[in-house]
Structure formats: C-alpha cells, structure tokens
Length: 332
Image: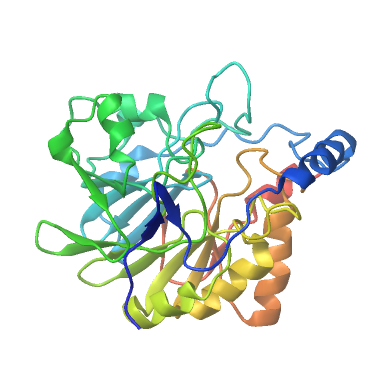
C-alpha cells in the first residue's frame, strides 16, 4: 500500500479519514459527567515509589531489545545497540502551568541526569502529555538528535535545542541513525495544539523504529483507523507494538482508542507482542485509572494477543510475553 504524506487544508493538517474531536454541543454534558463521575480516576493508594536500577544499562540486553517504561508514553528503548527516548515527560503536571492540571500518579523512576547515553529522542506531537517544556530544556546544549512531526521543531528551538539537531518528519519520511537504525514517521489519527488557537497546525505521527535485528512500532496517540493495516503491510512484521489504551471516552471516540480498539489495531499491525502505553500515569478521562489495563487483559485473552506489561521503571527485555501485574497491589 505504501504511506502517503500528510495533507493540509489551509494551515490545518488533516487526518486520513474524517475525524471528530469534542463537539461544541458536548461541552455541557461533558462538564456534567466530570462533576458527577464516581470512578477512581486518581489512585486512592499512592503508586510507587518506583526506582530504576541504572547500573543495568551498563550491560547491553541479551536479546538486543529492552524497554523501560517511564510512564504514560515515555519509553526508553534499547534496540540493537541504540538507545531511544520517546515523548519524554518528567514534569509533575501535563498542563500549561505546573500550578494546576493533571498530576502524575508516581514520580519518574529515573532522573534525567541518570539516563544512559541517548542516540535519539522522538516527539510524536505537541500535546502537553507528550511534549514537556521542562524536560526538553534539560537537553539544552547536548548533541542528541531530535526527530519530531512537522511543525513541532519550533517548540524545541524555542526551548533551547539547536536547529541542526532537529529533524522534522512528514508521514513516510525516514532518517538513519549512523548506519544501522532507521526511524520512519507514519500516520496516526489524532489532533494537535497547545492552546485555544493554533489547533492542528502541527502534525501528529506514529513511528517505526527498525534496527539491525528488531522492528518496533511506536503508536503514540491515535484513534483507530484503517492506516494501522497499511502500516503493518508496509513496515511489518513488528517484534513489538506500543499502543495507547488510556484516556478514552464517549465524547472523543475518534482520537483515542481504548483497550478494545487498541487490540484491534495490534492485530492489524502484524506484530508479535503488544505493549500498552498511555495509561496509569495521569488522570485524562472519566474511566478509573486501572480500567484500561484490566479491560485489555480480557480482550487479549479473547483475541489471543501476547502482552508486554513491565513495572514502571523496570528495564525489561522483550523476549516474549510478560505481565508484571504491578498495578494489582494498588487496587482498592
């Protein structure tokens, strides 16, 4: 099938199929739903603390593929001798200010200063829970290359990343790190913007990360769409697909998947193992904080899907299915 570049109407990037966001008529019912919601959207028991044993990074993974889930969509990916960080968010809140907004359920399990040397940082889109100013500013003065969706580079430059180390990618664009790892931007079904104005004026993407021996799909944020099958046919099979399972709701069904549609997307992608992301870290929807993973376990059983669910901060090799059940200890 191949992957087509993104399209714009005026200044606005478009999804590959018609996609609704929150409708004006849904605002009042949505506010009412939030006001009367009884779900445990924030854990009653404090999660963690989780702590990464950074000495593990001194020894390469035996399998060539190891993942550390920092939380939400922040992943430290060690793949075939390269180390990549995705959508790094270390701040306490994902908001325009640290005074209010969704707050972390647990502190990042590893300090930014303790991360191993990075070969690349990937930014999927400009939402606060994927693009964090304070975290980006930590990398000022480094020579780590950043790869991001079209238009997102303006924020990186504004926050101190030198332009020469920023590469913006359209859907279908690929870059090579040294001679043995390729990163390709692929479509997603989502939206962008960091405020009331400027909606959809930067692009949103998923990514294929292909090393010498392993091939990963990083889904970032997306609603379900036929493009997953196209990506699987063009770039698969994948050893691992990371797919969002949290922050879904009846008022925005097109831009987030939830565990049912995420498991369908996994089947479309031609991947071996599914890693759920975008859950258990921030309160971004009306469902209970643990509902996405609990539901996914059921869907995975019905659809014969192998899951990879490591504990936050635990560097874990991808050699087969793995479920730490870490959240079970915090259920009421």
